[in-house]
Image (cartoon, rainbow, N blue to C red; front, side):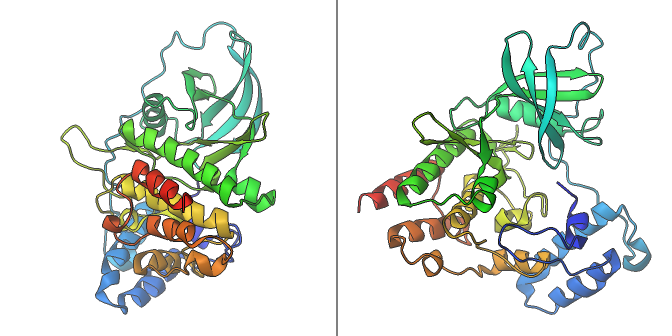
Length: 364
């Protein structure tokens, strides 16, 4: 994923069917214009202003100090362990994984289809990009530690981890399918109530396994939910990409804190943006945004700039789903809207609670 500042100034970056266009042309314009404009709004927006300021200063590396009078704000520690140096014995002899063909790209890594020469099967190799594979990078071990704890049919499986002359990589299950964003936005797939209910329950089952494994995913979006086909034609849903996952509680029993603009802004819960405490309901909010988009083809929280999108999350400026899709049963649209409630206490308490509410509504 591009940095926040890079994405903010990119006029080509927009979600499916969003029409969002970033306005700022420079760091100084962002700081002087957008933040000053926000500060003229009600006091509710002051925390958002600070989050934006911190993020810009972090990415500018202190380059704004000439007109802000501030030094760069250090990135908050995540508690992730740094990647270890490669064992010199690793990678010797013939390579185990061969025939790599690139099949995808994420914010921190490329994904390749490859052949496991030892077990004679196809696998997916996730190779980290420059800057995410050095001795001080945390992404490699963070994802490996996170996903290796989870064993569930609706979560991608991890088989191995190793290092070669190219760098560190993770070996994962190769999913014979495409992600929900490509399948719906580009492939034109549609979801009736029955198909959506199956999709939602499987997604929530995978999320429930994630939470029971002691983790928050924190980057749920259509491109991180794969849809594979069974021979019967039934969708099989798998959650992927745990590169931003955090433990539900640390060794001292403390919950994780939101990381501001780290991740996709269209699916970020308010508590993430405001750098507040997170729990299972944070992931439910993001997944609710995904469900809203799957059913309507529209983002629940949108705007003409990144700041406006954040403001729509924080002010709960959202069109009720039933107004986009009047043919859907009201119990279903109400259920989705409950997942994306502004206040955490108004959302289901857990993925299991969300499943139970969905099934209760489906019986009406």
